[in-house]
Amino acid sequence: MEKKHFIIIIVSIIVLSITVFCIIFFTRGTPVESEAKAKEIARNHVLKKYSDSFDDYEISVNDDGELWIVSYDIPPVYDENGEIVEATLGGGGPEVKIKKSNGKITYCMLQC
Image 1 (cartoon, rainbow, N blue to C red):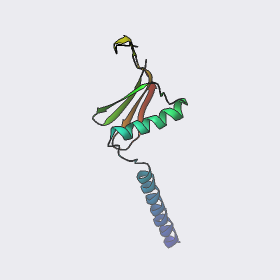
Image 2 (image 1 turned 135 degrees about the vertical axis):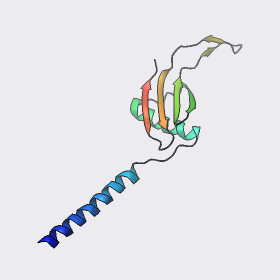
Image 3 (image 1 turned 60 degrees about the vertical axis):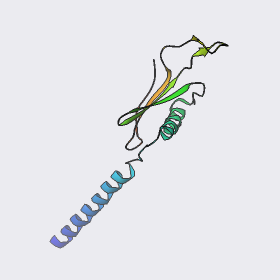
Image 4 (image 1 turned 180 degrees about the horizontal axis):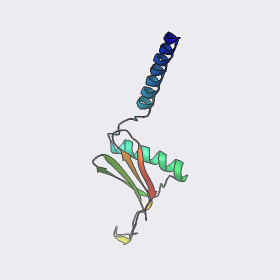
């Protein structure tokens, strides 16, 4: 009887170890090393979350150390001389923060 319990315990430990390894391995993500990749990740997320691609917005990407910050800003209105006639304060579009180390989105909200 003791040998049977021992085998069950060993098998349980092995199954638990494999499960933990799979969870850690398959949820770690892929590093994001470029602005272009950060834009692509943000665009896909924004399209899913808001059902809008915000094509008319200016997209800026900022490197904030461990994060990429992708902002969708309302573009200014220019006159025929190329001078700004009207600039909108606030972004209006989404701001997405992406961890560089694994590509996970840590924040996504519409800007005020």
